[in-house]
Length: 234
Image (cartoon, rainbow, N blue to C red; front, side):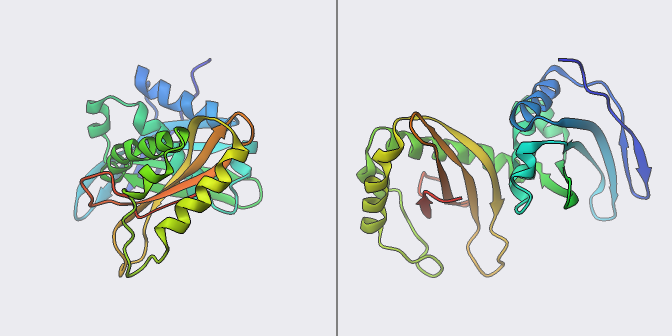
């Protein structure tokens, strides 16, 4: 694949510069293109902050994508996924080299939306993907009772019967067939200040019969594999 052209612009307190990409950066951009198609422009930027000094970020903008258009009503989903796909492709040193990843999604009718993801948040998502894979494997092996031991709802904000939830999942699952993989659509962190810190990871279970939506809410402060909620919804 031909290397994408880079662009540069300057506005007060914020500037993006054109530069050559590393092998891992190329891999990250190509991961984004493979998922969304369309076009992706990228570059390294710097922004001035009175409290934190100059910060370095990597910016990616996706446009002219049919897949992207399917998420026009919830732009944070593809934006977060773009940031994660790029971040996950970087080496440890490269991940530490950027303060944040900036993802811009450009829709035909809804315009240009910008989202910024600090490296600390992306590191949390990357670490919690292991929990997602563990739950996916339990479902793949039809071990729904095994999931129940990891369900630890915060009863102040989340109310459900674990036995009923597991029974519902087990009943619905056979119609979809064997799981091939989990495909990440995106994530968000709980925006409510009076609620526990949790991470919502959303995607799809790709199956041999019919793929289905799949999401997990995880307590970001948990040091084990406990989850707040698992459901066949985005």
